[in-house]
Image (cartoon, rainbow, N blue to C red; front, side, top):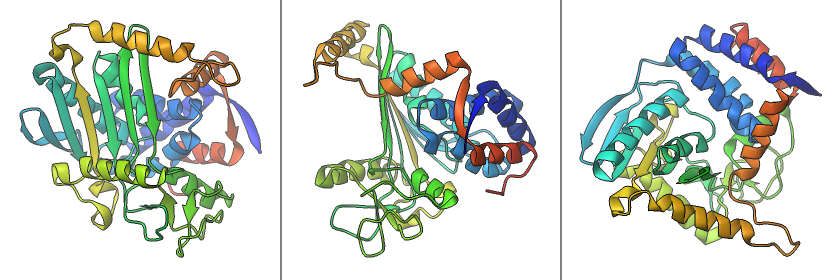
Length: 332
């Protein structure tokens, strides 16, 4: 059954849950807003349901991330099992600082908790006037057209760039559906979306209990993109890949910041981006409508929800949030 819940009530439950789980006080609001934003943008698999799941690991944090190795524009970070959004913020700051100094910052991070939507971090980079790219891998949970053995991570990627009126961003998995959809389908005994997951024989299945791998989008093109992301979040930094990714702590994350001012044209890139965005918005579809920019629908949806102060929420999920606030981080 669906509920209509005040956002402030949800925020209060999340605050109590974070406090009980030992999230450092200065980081609680950041963690809450990160997962809440995913929900409000219409990505429930990376919103409150993911908060309810990931909160069981919050108490496992050792401390703030530390730079393990760096040379020039590149750095490797030990996340020290920090809460996902907080560890990612650390990596964003480091990548941004290097980009300001050297034109590019490339940061790899491992041994941290997971976070929700990637756009939260690519947009942070773009808000500083830079071009941002964020990606991560996972256990080998994805396969490609015609195969049945999972051998790639789900390998999501997000990028963002600045304009004079904010940022433009894209955030996507390289599979037809993220693994969060499978986890929630198993939890709620719901069918999977059509032709997004395959069983042990490589046949598409809607049964969450029979699913063994997520399908990479775009056949050989999606395969190639996922393969690139696998290397960028793995061997580039000496991180595990494929079957060697055996837990949350061995999952690799990458944060890249690029400074357009290093091309010698000052802030001209913003005006150029304005022109590009303007031409896209003026392009018409066959139905006579405007072409929709990546990520814009989610941002608009979140803005409407924040203005109304309410959001629709599944009753079972609301009960899970109540359980977390009561100190129960295991029940589903």
